[in-house]
Image 1 (cartoon, rainbow over the protein chains, first blue to last red):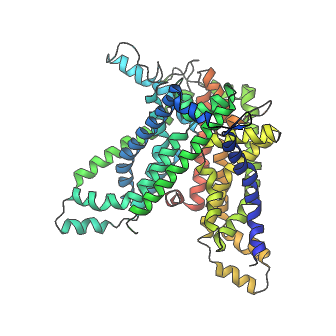
Image 2 (cartoon, each protein chain N blue to C red; image 1 turned 90 degrees about the vertical axis):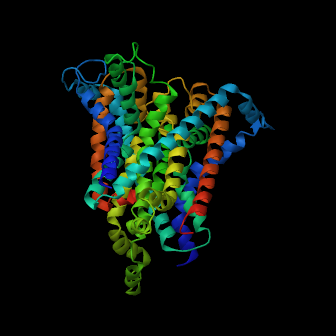
Image 3 (cartoon, rainbow over the protein chains, first blue to last red; image 1 turned 180 degrees about the vertical axis):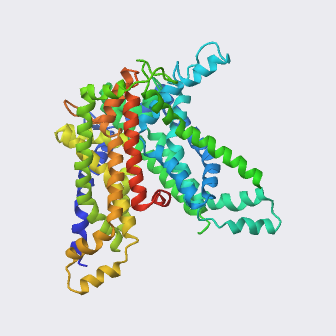
Length: 273
Length: 263
C-alpha cells in the first residue's frame, strides 16, 4: 500500500490527539517555567519548601504504597485460586471480579461512606458489642482512602495476575515435587517468579492509579488532600492555575518515570528473556 | 493438599465478600424508607427511586452524559477504526511511537487531561464548554476503541482480504465488506467498553462544568457532598444494572478473557 494512504488512515487520530491532548499538556508544562513573562523555577522551589504541599505528597505516596502492597497480598492468593478452577467456575469468578471494576467509582466510594461513617455499619457494630464507647472517626481519614482505593483497584490486580497464572504449566510444580522440593518451596521458586510480569503490570496499574485517583480521595478523604484533589482545589476553588499547572507537571513526570522504570524491570525479570 | 485448597477457597470467599458486599449494602439501603441513609434500612419504599426523577438536575445531566457518550463514541470510531486498522495491518517506521501516542490517554492522569483541556480548550481557545467536554471524552474513548479493535484484527486472517482484492475489489470496498463484518463483535464490544468509560468518567468531566453543562457523575458527586439520603443509592442501583447488562454483552461478544490478556 502506498505510504500516503497509510498516513491518511492515521492522520485524523493523530491530529485530534496532538491538538487536544499533546499541545495542551506541553503548553501547561512550559507555562510552569514562566511567571509573569520571565523564566523561573520559583514554583518548583516553592513546592519543595512548602510543608503543607510536602505533606500532601507524603500522604499520596503512603496511601498508594499501602494500597499496592495490600492489593498484592489479597490479589495473589485469590488470583491463584481463580486460575486453578475449571473454565466455567473461572469465568464466573472473573465476571464477579470484573463487575466492581466496571462499576462507577462514585458508587463504590459512596458505599464505603455508608459503611465507615459515624453511624455506619462498622461503628454501629463496634459500639453495639461494646468494643468502643464512642463511634470511631474512620471516614475522612487516610485509612478510609486506603480502604476505598484497595476496593477500587484490587480487581485490576486479580485480573492481571490471572492472566499470567493461566499460562503456567501445572506440571512444573509436580516436576519439582517429584525431584524432592517441598510444595511451598516449589511454589515460591517456580510459580512466583513466573508471575512476576503480571505482578509488575498489576502493581503499575494499582500504584499509578492510586497516585492519581481523584474520586475516591475526594469522597472518603474529607479535608485530607492528595495530589489529584489538590490540583482540583487549586484549579477550581483557589483559582491558582500556576500551582495547578505545577502539580499537573509533577503528576505527568512521576507517572511516566514509574511506568518507564517498571517496564525496564519487567523486561529484566521476564523469565522468557 | 486438600487442606491447603480449603484455606485458599475461604480466603477467596472473603476477598469476594469485600469486593461485592459494599455493593449489596448500597442495594439494600436504596429501598429504605427513612430520610437518613442507614444499614440495615428501616421500612421499605421506592420513594428514593421516585426522587431521582423529581430532581431535575439528575435528568438534565443524565441527558448530557448520554449525548456525550454516544456522540463521542461515534467520533472516536470514525478516527479510531482507520488508525487501529493501519496500526495492526502494516509495518512501518515509527509504529511503536504511534502506538504509545494512541494509548497515552490511558496513561496520563485523568485530572491532568481535564485541567489542561480546561486551560487551553475552554480558556485560551475559547471553545464552548459542551464542545470541550465532548472532545475530552473522545480523547478518553479513543484508546479503548483502538485497543479492542486492534485486538480483534490480530485474529483476522489478512489472506482473506488479499483474496478479495485479487478478485478485483478495491481496498476500501474490501474493508467494508470483508474486514469489518469479521471484526463486528469486537467493534461492538469496543463501543460498549468506551461507552462505560465515558459514562462513568469523573476526572475529565469535573473540570468541564458550566451553565447547563455537567454530567451525571459530577451531579452525583455534588449531591453526595450536600445530602446523605438514599437517592444516590437508588441511582447507584440503576447504574449497576446498566453496568451488568453491558458487561454481559461484552462477555457474549468477545469473552472476558480480553481483560486478562490485554493489559
